[in-house]
Amino acid sequence: MSVRAETVYRVRVGELDRHGDPIGESEREPTQAKVWPRSSNEDATQTNMVIDRLGLDVLDRTFEVLPSDQFDVRGKRYGVEGEPFDAGRRGQLVYLTGAVRGG
Image 1: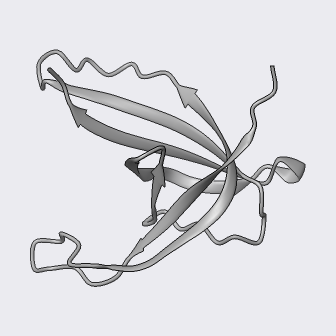
Image 2 (image 1 turned 90 degrees about the vertical axis):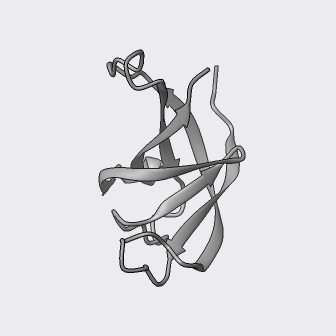
């Protein structure tokens, strides 16, 4: 089964407060990407957190992705994990991680 491309949004945070938390978003830009799930080995039972991991194939290889960027995918915000890299014809490969409070 083929994975279809969908619209995701890169969020580039502008200013940070004195604690390192974002004050506002300086840029939210759409791009097309293939989104696929990644497994997690994290034990979330003690922290009551669910670790949500995704992979992105950003189809536009000229679309700049920085390690400090965040992405809005399917209504959730994810941080970039590690360094994005060029995957040739597939575009840029980006790993994303998001933590969501468990129930």
